[in-house]
Image (tube, rainbow, N blue to C red; front, side):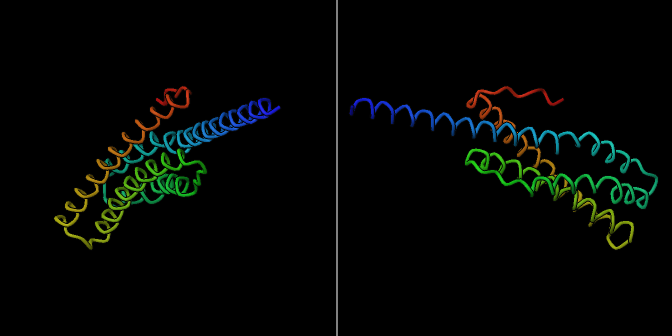
Length: 169
């Protein structure tokens, strides 16, 4: 009888561990798919609008594009990331990497947007504007480095949890 109870307990523990791993794997896949859908899917549109802004005939026109078209999408992404509340430790760690990436990226956009607004209002010198733009570019580089780190983490987790990442491009 004791042997059967021990065997039953071992089997129950194994089932519990498998269920926990499966729940983590499912949460991780759901988080990643949500990120791809709500962040990555908007990056092409952001790049297009950024190019539209950069090729504008005036600072006023560029500011209007950024204010009315570009920044609402950037804010959607930031709001989406800020709304995420992962439950498992592994997804919390991965979310932390993605949140740091998006925060740096958002800060860079905000810095360039603020400079453009000041240029429209003529409340900043060209030298000051260039200095802030260089700082913003450094933030973009930082965001890119953080994105690479997060991408590598997801690749490692996908291997660990045995699921395949679809090509996002």
